[in-house]
Length: 296
Image (cartoon, rainbow, N blue to C red; front, top):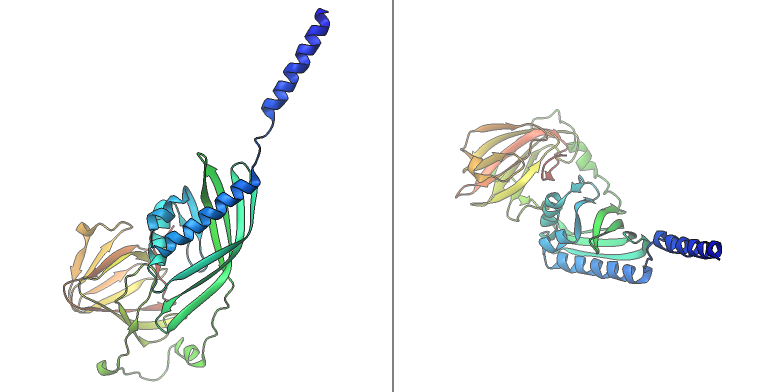
């Protein structure tokens, strides 16, 4: 009898042990709907320009990747990236999930398509493509761990005139001050109001270029960096510049007309204009590229 009782006890304990080792159940439908709702909240936060709400939907060490831009890693970088995005004039950004696959109690994969449009210097700019998002459940809440978008919009073909200006010309060139054409300088993360004039070359292509930027009074631009060095000359007004990845305005120096600065490649900087209109001239080797934040 004792032997039989011990056997029965062993069976019961074995069943309990197996029950304790069983994986947690996944409520796929509920979790998928929760993630879908969070995606809708995300889109509403973008429309409302609520950057802090967007950041709160991400994990602390989340990574956001966008076509033709460096990856944003961590809350500060994601905040900077979205601060630029939501301030694009006339922004419209919509995405639609194709699939939300809850693969475990704490991991889900989502992918789908997106469309985006905003007002550019030459009119409406449209983009579309695909996206993939990995969600992690942290302390019982689903949060974005990795988000990546891939544009499916073809690159525009360069016109013949663009090709000819991408290399140096053997002929003399003269641009009178009265003939300088100013256009809006629209860059994500930069407040509107800056004007750009290209005097020589094609800044978007290989080869040397010369351009000018005109800032309205008391304009401030955020921390950013360039893959190539900048040769900068102040032509008009008061130009302010600070170096480093943090906007510490106590370190900013002011420069007057005639002053020359060289900013090495990959050196983050910020600054702006004094109380009057300020014009600077930049020259260097293209392509001229600008990225928000600090290089990784």
